[in-house]
Amino acid sequence: MARHAAGETRASLERPGGASGSRPDLRGQGASFGLRHPNLGGLPAQQGGRTRDKRWLPFRGSDGQASTGGAAGWELRENRIMRPAIDHRPKILKAAARLFAARPFHEVLMEDVAEEAGVSKGTVYRFYRSKEDLCAAIVIEWMDSLLERLGEALRPDADIEAVLGDMIARMAEHLRRQFDFYRVMQKEEANASLIKRPEFLARRKAMRDAFAKAIRRGRERSELRDVDPEAAADMIIGMTFSLMKFGSPPRPPEEVAAMVTDLFLNGAARSGKGGSSDR
Image (cartoon, rainbow, N blue to C red; front, side, top):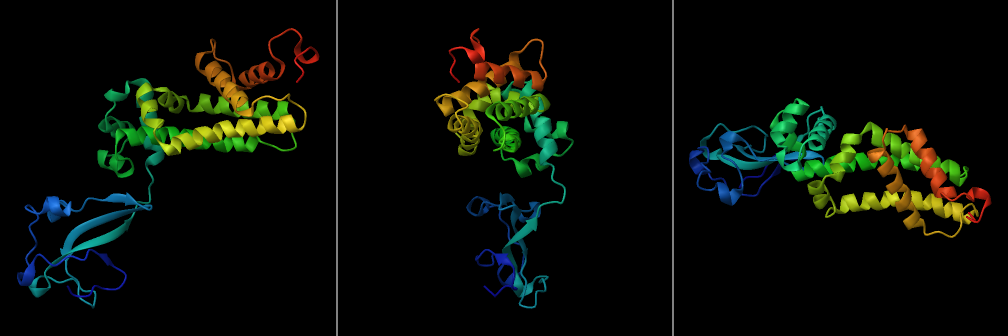
């Protein structure tokens, strides 16, 4: 095989066109190459933020000029093509979240998501290989933005009541603003897929760790008694989610934060702060 022009990445395969230079016919070889017929283009796959594409193209000589046939023939060339400048992922995720939240998981098709988002089905598949991947991306996006907000509330100079109140208020507000995203996470079919994904489990742990960090700090400052930080974090998260999901009538985030913070710090007994609770 002749040397290729510098800077191009190409598969090291012999030219199927031979001396005649005719376009190769892959109809009998498609399975072995894993490619479509060259007239239909390649099969792109996402790798490292770029779209990688393989296709049969005219062979290029050392001068970089494409051959028009003859002895040069055809080659399987691997090009790297930058993604389009427009990133459709945010509107795809929002559209998918609305659909998944409103319908059973198995009734939502990728075609439905494309129509709701106002893009082609191919555009959806460019970013998400399957409905399961799309569903996971919805939840990961929601958790990432929530974790960022929780991190902002972990102020080292504030007392435990202020820190927990701020964290809970931010979480409640995040739930209110992106409730469709949260409902997707609660779907049984989605959850069955999510709990197997390391990226989801890592974020769920990070959410618990954020609250546990605040509770440990409160213990170190003698603001709290010796409670299990992880268990206490789970309780706070659970109370907040439950109030936002089942509360009737719905309460604003600030009210939810005040209720959960007070109940966690002071309990429900009449003794309150001054009694036997021994914070």
